[in-house]
Length: 212
Image (cartoon, rainbow, N blue to C red):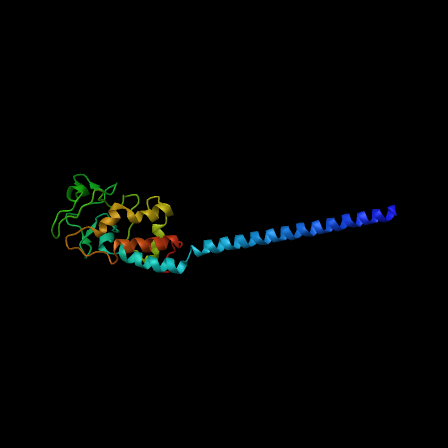
């Protein structure tokens, strides 16, 4: 009788251990599966934030603004700014200078004050009027869409900006000034609000460069 009880106890303990083992196995497997799914879902979410097609399409619109005279005239390939809707060499041949604000007595602020002079063909104004500095010229003129996109995201060429700072640059006062020059000048092809929207779309979807 004692022997039978002992056998039953052993059988019960083995059975209980087996059930516990199976439960642990199932739990561990389920947890592992959930983790894998969670990781997969996380990667899906991350990939959804990077859409090369949306990014490239947005940059094409960005490019149309950056290559307009209102932007490109202050991003020339040489050290003399351009002017006018036809982007001709600036009258009086002012030069970039080390800090982008001119040289000697021919400083940008000499003619470009904090506010523009009313009337047509008069100097537009901005309290921070300048070209990019000599050590980081940020040339737009002559650049393809691909070349310009690659240049814009390179901290060694864009003024040390990371993606966050580059994104915020759309609200820079001098950037906004491109829509406030007056004097009958042709405005960029998009409003500033539209430009900011495609600028953010380009960056937020991965800041991809067009193929050419």
